Length: 310
Image 1 (cartoon, one colour):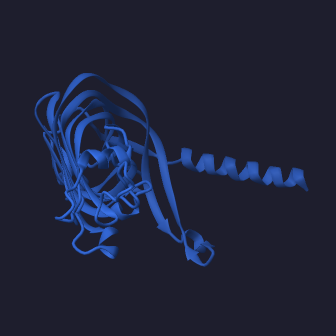
Image 2 (cartoon, one colour):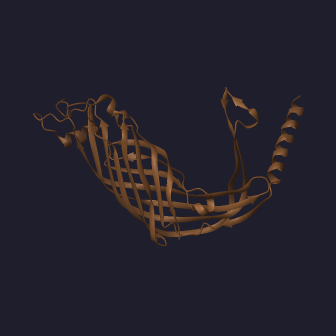
């Protein structure tokens, strides 16, 4: 019985492999070597989650991207603002979340290399009538081809600003007196970020016998930054008869005055004339440590609005 089952599995795997090999294709365009002059992305669903700081969990919208007026020298930008924070549930007129960054980058190394590149051929919902727990499922067919991949290594630095509510329950001074009038404070971070990033661009189009014209056209940015910033802590519900002591608040919170982050962004790169799509999906994921706020994770979905290459 075991030998028969193994034989069936081997036969299925072999048949799948032969099926994948029988896809006939022709590369019609393969060009990742261009200057991403202007890339603009709209984030419509961005979630920021400070660990152990539930009042500061927020949902944001914003824009991000780059402008590269000179080959290898460009500008990064990002702006996010919350349309909902968890603090709004328990507090009246709480501080909002906002994040603004403006910096530059310099390409110090890079290469273009032919390597295995996946191309999605077809996506079928509820393929062959398969169900899982009465939910519709999907099947994705893809092929791996040899195509050009461009990789750029970048130095980057810039201005960093972030403002956020913070949970401050039971924060007291040396005399045991509550520092904040209520259980919510506000942190405002202003300073610099600096680090390294790796940008990868794939832009290949193929023509297949059974699936028509398909393509992989996207950019990916992996970055690692240190954050050198000063942080001001304030009380949005300050009691006028008891002046707020910011230094005592910082000492009581006890967080580090420096931070870091690692992130991954993806965006579309090829123009509509070739893809047939005016826009395309973009994503951004990030995790790290913020001065005086602590550990966090964030991520979201968006669309690429502008894909202007030279």
